[in-house]
Length: 370
Image (spheres, rainbow, N blue to C red):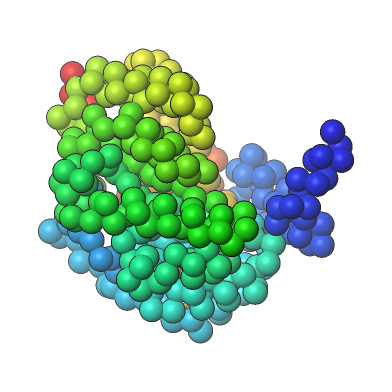
């Protein structure tokens, strides 16, 4: 058994950590500081998200960019800026290349990934994509050989008709074909990575297809199937539940769980998937306290294409609310700035760290219908 574990580590990229004790120590220290909600921190975030592009080739029903009063500055991060920012995080373990945009819109995506792999050879580099630019801008083989550790495709439907409604696109079959191409190319090349996953965001127009989403993903043979994600906030996404009654949502999650268990799908069945009835029975009480479990002030940080350190990944203010700019002030200085220390102190005392957090965590809206 010990020999098998060692072999598994050596086959994965995790063995590289044996050569980087500083990275392992930083991860350990970060967990300790997060657990005690330290106000001034010595560790660096082990999870970072660099939004290399906030442009997109789709206008999905649930996306914040459909909100009439949302007018973010759009653009791509230059390769020079990307490298300058990434070098400020030498101990990162996870690097995500996606934010509100489509990562494959970046004209130098392959160069970006190669740079990331060179600077962070020990890290897991991943991204989320609608997948439609594969075969148009980048081939499946280029994606597989790029150096990505994981790639997650946003499905949000199990049929072309529903995909057309929620993603305003006629290319559902193309997306499914592209996922299959990436998996087949990986197999043909004899590679283990990138790990391929799929996602599904529950909305009024697609929630009934959650069980079929699992069946489709299992049929494709993906490595990971994300739980159907819930959207219940007021800030611009097409609402995830206003016309879905509480019982309808519970019923579809139950059926999705049943299908996943029956097919032995590689999908986590925790949190609301483990007990939908219990989760929604105490939903509002738990939601009001959700911010108390926030990790963004200690670990998982986001940076937009222009170098701004964002609030978090769960609120539109993340695109306009900034803790500072990494092209003007080194991250180490921002990380223990007066503003961030005050936010951590508020969290430690059970107060909201920033005003926009109220809309996301304390007062989710629209309310589930009964």
